[in-house]
Image 1: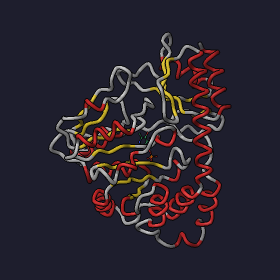
Image 2: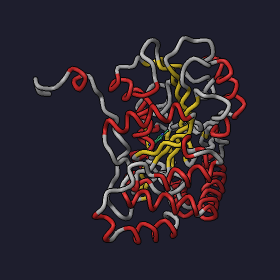
Image 3: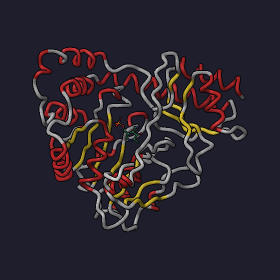
Image 4: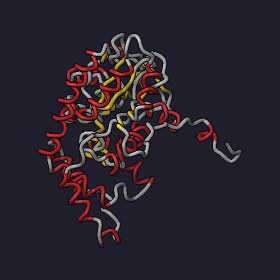
Length: 352
Ligand code: PMP
């Protein structure tokens, strides 16, 4: 730490992402990537773009991508904002839309970037505990003074899903601040709240191409909401840079949205593997929380989770363990291919 650092930077505790080990033979089930590659059409589009056109700046508004997202979700391009991964979209939402006169409400067990952005933007966190079943209880958010509300649906790292009717109920009661629904994992079993944006001008829905569209390396995320909210996000974005997405990202993302069949087939495979993995883990004595995401959250009543994670690692299998109160006995395991799940199950059977 240098004496030249600003007070804001001194106070920051940056988010530490799951490790990205380089060994090729690892079974990597720790950062919720998709085990299947991107759409071949997306790869072709990226390859086609990787030529002379890279001399030129990209479209500052990414209009083609906004149009593709609007068509896919049955909304208008004016209701779409795009950014460099949903992390950037969320960061802009924190700056553009969350008020400082009351705490930002979010679950105690949730995406760990939210408290980081609170620190960055000087927003007071209003931590709301999950219920006894590790679920978000909407009644705990209703009627509380707040400068905004944010949660993932399905939640991470639990995987638990709120039905759309509960989000609707929250929005009916919370009309004076923005509600951000972070739908990074919605395509694996949830129902998107994008269908509600015409009715609720304070709803912002954030999605990513990193999970269900297998494009984590391309860094594309987007938000859907009332054009007024989108305009606020654009103002923040334009104050940081002129070109939110590069040419390769725009080309690949547009093609990914045009290949619906591939996207649905990959999601179906992940969901089928999830069902299979949950059943097998239960057979090994694990308690697995119901998950609508591409990962599961599980604990073994007789085994220490940190030790289990270390023993799996010795066998070249990486899962995520959080040293956070209430969940330190859980492991978060990304749904891999069936073959990867089998490798995991075999290792667990040996360890247990
Ligand atoms: N929201 C949640 C809940 C996440 O788990 C993640 C992935 N770590 C993100 C947002 C960010 O994803 P990306 O920046 O890759 O779009």
